[in-house]
Image (cartoon, rainbow, N blue to C red; front, side, top):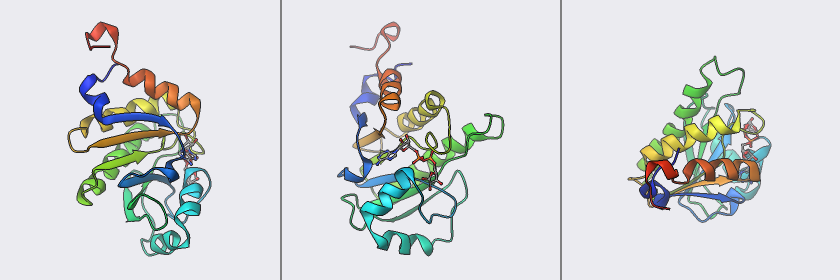
Length: 180
Ligand code: APR
């Protein structure tokens, strides 16, 4: 499914450490406590410093499918948007809707904060075991819906498998007549 040239001008796929990105907002794959964890959550908290946890403590948690925003503190990014993705069970317990919702919620907060650039990790595809291909399809669908509101939307993959999946989904498909 190629998303077309106009989408790929705003949406970028990279394989990189999201904590090092100089964007207005980085999205964190958080849990409902917002009190940190492993994976990208741990990396963001380590890089942002202890003030991030202090700010998160005041938020009182976040339900799955929703997001909360804090400053980025020691990160290059001005904001951290903590988005809580679903734990994968079998796809029949609302996981697709919850994953879509956590991307949409992050974009709402980014727009309110007047962020012009935003980077997402591959939410729920690590500890939460969401199948990468399906998660990428949902993520890119929501990114495509917002590509007119941002200068840059970055799918910041960490592993090569996710990067390859995103790149394949974003590439213009020859059948659609998109230019190469
Ligand atoms: N930069 C970008 N992406 C990263 C980084 C990083 N520094 N570190 C890990 N990732 C990637 C993982 O490779 C995976 O593709 O982030 C994606 C999400 O994986 P997790 O961090 O495990 O998050 P998730 O699957 O959403 O599970 C959330 O894990 O860390 C805990 O507190 C978190 O309980 C929550 C759960």
